Image (cartoon, rainbow, N blue to C red; front, side, top):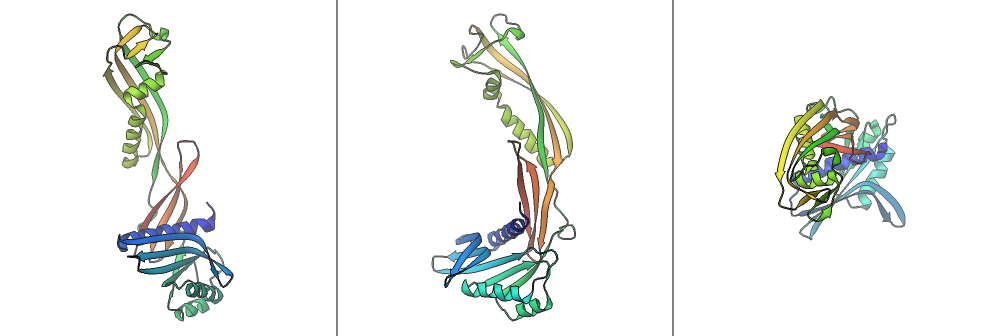
Length: 276
């Protein structure tokens, strides 16, 4: 996630939460990022463009600009430029988020009644109870030990094929269809996720199911009356890595976390809380 886009995304998430909390459900909300406005042939980019539509009669516009500057302060020229965007969009209010402002910028804001300045911080630790903890669960191992009640005698190492309800099926697919192994795994993962108990966790579970006559055939001839399995799960609960975190003064905070996805790649989860 690029730094600039990360800040914009954090501010957008906070504003979405504020609007959901305070705006009537009958009001339609539109939020766009990096919207381009054409005013008399001149193009202007708006970091976050918000429109509220009430009863298809009245609508209001709010625009937000983020300045993700580590060492440079926002000066009066940036405020003048932002005020121009407020005017050409006929925005009800414009909010500019930055880490610091010059004295001239602050005085310029005082002369611009539709502009509000709010400070941006990178560290949540000193605000609102600190950085929220987020964990994720990784499945390290699944082992299935089956036992079949069969008419006839078949040694376990001589089982070569399965036919279930008239179709050939792999053993792993058969267990999934009979016992919903992935559903059990997901339920265990959810339990661990809510417990937030970091470390290795192991579970054993036994299940059995009766089979209708002729539904399950082994080696094309031996009918199975019952299937019993012993499932072993090994999970690891890990604390998610904080990628970025922001506090927008008087509005809220966002923490972005990196978590593994089922396909092996990495994804981002965001936790948002508001002050407003």
